[in-house]
Length: 182
Image (tube, rainbow, N blue to C red):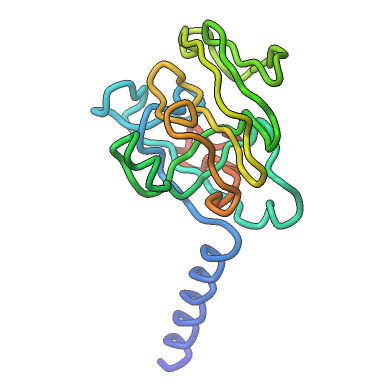
């Protein structure tokens, strides 16, 4: 009996340590990343009955800086909470890196005045927005949802600080028919 209790206790400690330091699961709560990552109906704009769940790799950015195109999970700052009327963790795609100047013309992103190709973005989700944003500060990233028509992202509240990034979304693990890279 004591062996079982010790085994279960050690297993629970190992799982908690793994989640705290290596990888943590997250559920997709909103349609801002549709159709790349699905949220669940009845939320408006969601394409699925079951929300995707992803594993965020918490170690990857100890070895290199976040890269353009990475889908990241991050803690919402007060600015994010105020602009989006939501709190907790968000998931978005990195589009702008430190030192870059971002703008958008009719839904197309320009980085330092040069058109940026986004093969992951479907035309119906691009939107038609135009705008210019401040140069991305050091240790910060400009993030956008893949569903630009409804995403509350850096266009509304500014950049994500490096310290607020929890990790990179590595794999979708639920539902079973969506297992794979996000």
